[in-house]
Amino acid sequence: MLKTYLWLTFCVTVWGSNFVFGKMLLNDFSPAALTSLRLLFIVIFLFIFIFSRHGLQKISLGDWGWIFLLGVVGVFINQWSFFEGLVTADSTTSALIIATAPIMTGILAAVFLKETFTIRMLLGSIIAITGIYFVATEGGKTLQFDRGLLWIVVTMVTFAIMIIITRILSQRIIPIVTTFYSNVIGFIISVPAAIVMDDPVRVSEDWQGWGLLIVTAIVVHGLANLIWNHYIRYAEASKASILSNLEPFVAMAMGVLLLHKPITLPEMAGSLLIVGGVIFANYQHRKRSMSHS
Image 1 (cartoon, one colour):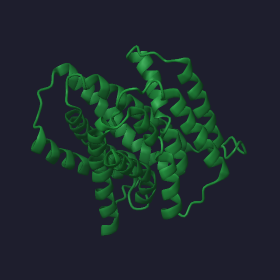
Image 2 (tube, one colour; image 1 turned 90 degrees about the vertical axis):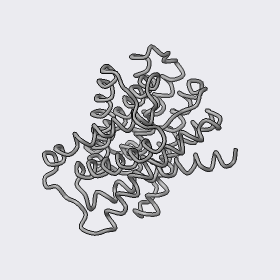
Image 3 (cartoon, one colour; image 1 turned 30 degrees about the vertical axis):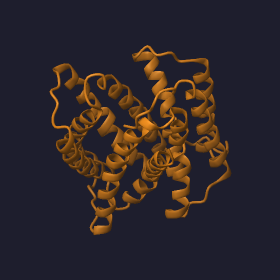
């Protein structure tokens, strides 16, 4: 079990670090170009993995509609809004907002999958939203809301939508296959989008920028997801749930190490409210194993 939780902790560390690495990559790449290039390397990785393990799977016309929607909303918009938001948004605050995705998923599941949205989940949502307000306004000092944080909210919502659509498709299609096809669609859309949306299109002129891009794309969205989905089967759902909520704290720590960004009291207090609210809302809801998409 120690090996299981060490690997799961590794995955959480990788995902939490993604906020800081994303911020660093934006120094060399424009948001839409970064989205397109990252998706390219994710697709290449998934292609190699799938054809060495699974092969193609026949998909019905109706499911192709879901996969297309997943590629547009859950992949392209999700990835692009993440980088667009990080242009101005703080990496720690961004991580805290996205940490509330399980609550949004619960709301969407109640609407579209007819799952129960309990009073416990409602109270947890209120606690988490209070935490977001506390962090975003620096302890209530200012009501100004960074434009980038609005894009991070879009990232959080599209991530929740991705989970719902993946859950629907998982009844008929292997999740890794769904991930591959949706990323291919997301990449195809991202190419013309980069030309239209970035003014100007910027790409790194040195190998360090490209190296960071390739490694983070493969490790964050490839290896970490595969490792998590493998070892989550051997872990207790409640403990794995708590582990997954440590991402904002990893983002804080990495921000200190790589960006030399100090941790403020409002950030720490708000993060405790957000993570506490999410855990409170989802503790009973998550009796089964989770899957990170």
